[in-house]
Image (tube, rainbow, N blue to C red; front, top):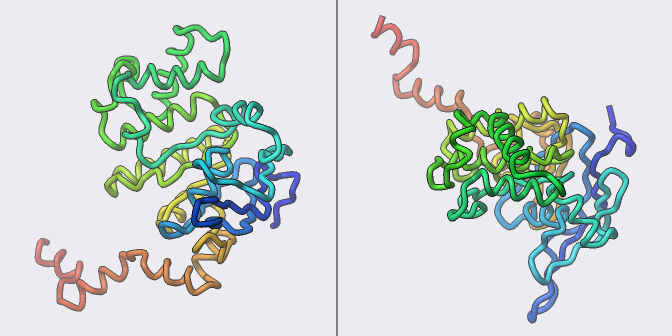
Length: 288
């Protein structure tokens, strides 16, 4: 069933991102359109340089120097490209939160994680006391399943593993109770087991809070676990979009088919084992 415009939390229409340099103007996102319904989850997939991260920075109003965005980015009925920086600061972090791919570089090593989350929270909640902010921080850390949050709130980033640092970044986003979360390659630097835990956490947060989600990744397998719809990008353009189940079962673009072919499949691995005489049945019989 199609989603009407009135149900959309975010609607991006003909978004283009350009950079002006001494060598001329380069377009890194070219007339991209998609929507995210309230409570929905969209995956944006593509190789490095496809424009997916610049799309997210354009939505957040955080393009690097020299970058400009055109088109429209309508969030809850308001075009973010026309509201001005002061109004955008009230949206950014408060109503739209972003989780970056490298939490170690996003967190300041000289301050405790609790201080950093509290600072972000208090910057959007004027008049909140330090004690009240600390309470919110501990609750946010508990929501992302950080054990003994009341003690670990006073720890420094280097005292956490990579997966736990990513949970800290998610807790920082959750403390604002955003309506939309943009997660930019949140599992890239994590091992497979921790990656699965973070994806489960994002799905849990979406279910429990009703927040919309945009998940940016190069990995189609990741998208299949968390999102409802998918946008496939290549060289700044959208080559395909649709429901995840439809795109996975019947991809229409050759590039999408190649991405799907690159996803490891357990049945293929089992087949390879069987061709070498290492079937799971044989292993089981030998160990019976």
